[in-house]
View 1 (cartoon, rainbow, N blue to C red):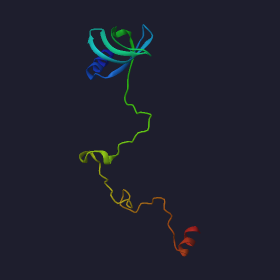
View 2 (view 1 turned 60 degrees about the vertical axis):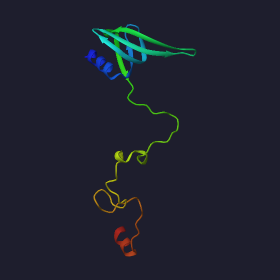
View 3 (view 1 turned 180 degrees about the vertical axis):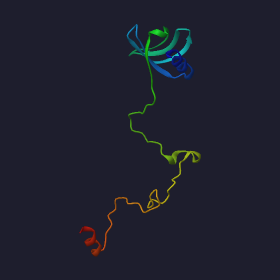
View 4 (view 1 turned 45 degrees about the vertical axis):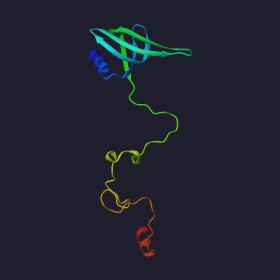
Length: 127
């Protein structure tokens, strides 16, 4: 089962993080370059203060203990979030209910506005 998943990651070409059980270490940001039998070829980079080193490493399939991949990321800095007006016309979603005073069922929507009743109605409601 792990062999098929590793091969799928190789086909996708995405970066993954792998934990090597026999060495008790993580390899971050690796790409699976090749899968042959029980050998997996990885390519990754490590950066320290002075230089960036590129590595290509072959590991046995049985030494891989865990695999993780990044699903999504969002920068922490403030930026303008794209809104629907920035999308091309063909990709925009149009409002199915253009009248803001109508709710989904066609009635008048209560948007938290206080309604005033005539005095005689107030007495009937609050009794």
